[in-house]
Each structure stands twice: as structure tokens, then as C-alpha cells.
Image 1: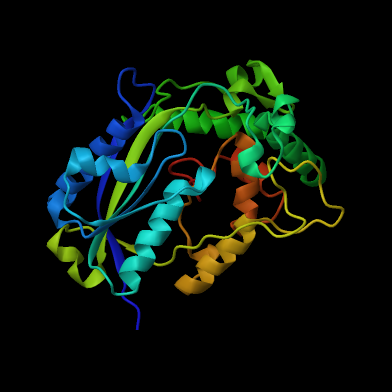
Image 2: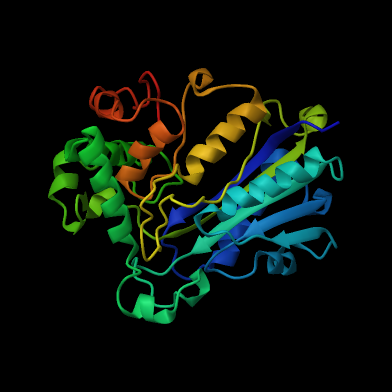
Length: 320
């Protein structure tokens, strides 16, 4: 018999550029704020999963938080590091081993999207040195093909960015706090067609910590627990698109987003039609558009109408 899980505390360090503050320190701030939110101390936390891709080993933050001897496991899974930490913490409580734990993600990225060292990604360093690891080109190629197949316009990509900047202007934790119009997005420098500068997220820094507890004990920490119905991680199958792949398979296969989403809905006993809103990865505007369909929230191509009609805005039919 598995144990139900709830999020009972959250802490964040402001995102953006924080000169003089290490990524590790930002993670520590997030942890302390999460503990304060849940009304617990660091000594109460029984286990932790934490990760960072560019700011050091997460478990070393115990030197700043307190040497309590808790189980602390480092997680490193690219862009999915934070989600993988949550997945691990979620399943640890479901197993019944512990009652209260924390998932932590933080980073402090260098500027730019260019990589030289690609040996760690299963490719020789010659690949990055040749300029082939410029990640923006892969995102551009993928959404360009998708636009051709399903009739998505560049205006729709710009509206996705416009929405993101507008939402960010209302969020005190966001980096970009200034609204930018659709016209400004389209007229910003072209990086990898059809994606312009303001259609991409910027490598930045910040931190988040979530405190998880057994659902039947959630009331001890908060009046408004968030109950986790599912958490799923999937890797790609042959034929799915990979950012650093040196080739594309002739036979196309659904990406890991499709597989993970289906598994999560099945695990939760729900479907896409039961959702009222969604938070989707938007490394660039095209990703959000494609993930809307990959998660089953619409058919491929329907995003054009939904976004143009404002249905994905706050207050719209299906906020994204």
C-alpha cells in the first residue's frame, strides 16, 4: 500500500542575475524560506534530494544549513534536475520510508547558449568545438518543421512570449519584470529562424525548494496542502527528437513528453480534459506550443486558434 503525498511548504530565491551571491547560497535561501513556510526547522527534515547543473553539489549545502546527518542525495538530470528531485522525494514518501522531506533545485548559469565541452553528452568535444552544440538551432529547426506541418504562425510564437513577459511583470520572483509587446518580440534579433531573441528564455540563476509530507500529516504544516497525484520521468525512445543529436531518425517517434504525460494521467486516474490550467516548459516559445498538444490539451494545430484567441492567458479558458 502506497502513501499519499502533499506539498506543505515552498521557498524561492528570486530569479535573474544576483551578483555576489553563489548559486549554492541561493539554494540555501530557498530552503530556509520553504522551512519557514511549512513552520519547520532544518532539523525536522528527514531526507533531501537536490540538484544543480552549474552551481556545485547540492548536498554540500548542509554545511550552511546544519549537519544533521539526514539522507541527502544529489540529482543531475539536465533541465529536468528540479523535477527529478521532486520525483525522487515524492516516491520516497510514497514508499513509507520517511514522512517529511525536501526537493531542491538551484543554479547559476553562465551567459549564452554555446557549448564546447560535449564529451559529457556522449559526443566528442569536436562536436561542440565545431559549433554544432549551439542549442538554439535545434529548437529553431524543430518548431520550424512543426509550423510547416500544422499551420502555426510566427505571430503565435510571439504571443506566447508576450504572455510570458506580461505574467512575469506580475511575479516578484521573476527575472523579466517588464512587459514586451508582440511587435517587439518579432522585431528582436533573429537567432535561429523562426525564433527571435525574445522568444528564448535566458540562462539565469535562482533556486526553489519544496517540502513534501505524508498527506495524512499535511495539516500539521499548512492549511492549504497541494496534493500530488502523480510524478513521472521518461527518457526518449528511438526516433524522438534530441537537442544534441548529430542526426535525425527516418522513422519519427513520440517524444518523452508524450510518454511521461500519458503515464502521469494514468497514474492519477485523470485525463487532459480534467485539467483547468497547465505549466509547460518554455525554453523558447515553440516548446510551449508543441507541449500543449503533446500533453493532450489540444490537437496538433489547434494551438494557433487557442493562443490567438487568448484562451491560454490568465483568465482564459485554459491558462498556460
